[in-house]
Image (cartoon, rainbow, N blue to C red; front, top):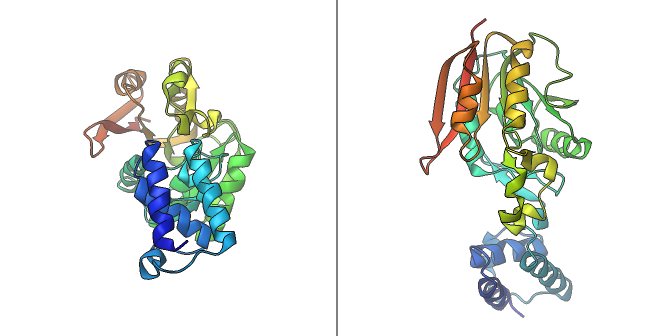
Length: 276
């Protein structure tokens, strides 16, 4: 079995099962089985697969056909041009979340103290640490997620202090200049309708924000004035249909409220500044 033949067979299996981007997925899985980058497949299409590589490739295809996300199979996901290790203990970083990073970078000043609440893989915190002169700290309630975040930060050389706590509960008062969060915002009632890759594999604690999906926004907005310094920034990634309810939570004590949209035109980031 050559690399070329293996790719054709794998892509056909994935396509027949209606897996998205079947050819790309087959390439990623085969490259992972070979321990190579995808470019190697194009340079060596007639190379014969070893028995070991064929066994691994078959297992990865089987996992993907059963719904396991490709990112969890290969153990990595690119975010803001860097590779992050991901496991089922953390949410897979999405490209849309890069809008939250961009919005944060526009508001960060040198030596600002920045807190990433619900850091998961550490993608936001590590990226902000590497792309700015801010001092980063990040929190998560999941110790398993924090282990992945610490590993990612160390491997990338990102200076981030990590805190195990519920939201910002262990953060000192008036110690933060910018609080950023991509909180769990899926309503629990939406669970049956989610894609199986999300519903069956990504961690519940990182997905569901409560019965309405707004509960963690409310808790963070309530606690943010304690944590933020005067005129500090609060930035959220927004879930589907969450803009207006979250904006209503910011009626008092907040100014400079701004909404940024993603490439599809959906409201993706909300930023607000503490009055005092």
